[in-house]
Image 1 (cartoon, rainbow, N blue to C red):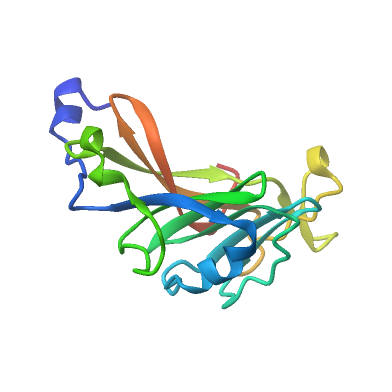
Image 2: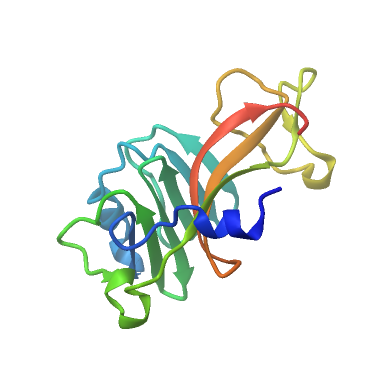
Length: 188
């Protein structure tokens, strides 16, 4: 376990190290908004609709019906674009290596006076997703979510699947979470 002094000496990231942007778009603009982004280093997609949640990888276009979408998360090593419905519009937040496209109306987190000098500790973490792979059923299954179709875009059929992410925290409080990928794993 690290001492308090060791923790204080850890490198923190600030305005010149990471891009943090946000904004709001109308429901009808969501497809064009997503098309404008360079998603080449963000291959994972979580799309939540009123019917289900799907997780996929390496899809060029997200084929969605904006009227039933509740949330979209596009992520990878290059960044994490999170869009969440708020009535008839979507609020979005991006954390990543590159700024958003120039023709998007966006608010730069670092430009607010109260955020200019912020510094965040970054911690890389992973968490198990629902289900174990069942050889008999040829899919991931978990009795707690028995009717849910658990489909994960990972190579092979690992016993478990983990989501990889980074937390950006300040004064012991997590301010942002950046999903970076998925991987197969064991029980732990």
